[in-house]
Image (tube, rainbow, N blue to C red; front, side, top):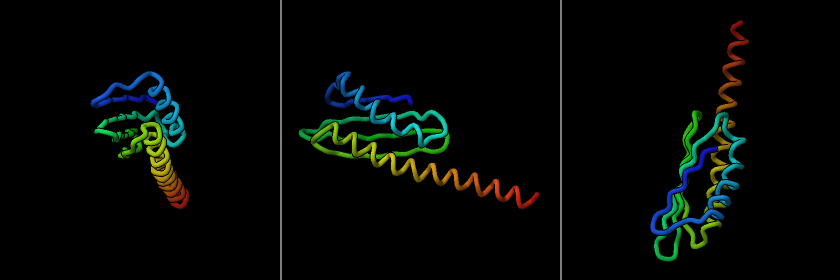
Length: 107
């Protein structure tokens, strides 16, 4: 999984980058190919606004979250992305199984 982190109005450290990579690596099993993750982190006064866009051949997902705790924000985003990616994965599997069944019926 390729992760790009872009921070606005502050600088992220290596520890946070490793934390984000560890969290987002859990999403690999929901994609058929290697997805690209673009993470935008903005700091506005006391809140962090985190936007995550995941692109792969099977589809694209976008989540936005804000909180005063950056690590909690990333954790929430990963949980929401897991739910969306799981639904997308199941939908793609159902479509492929239906097309296989249709081909078997035609034979």
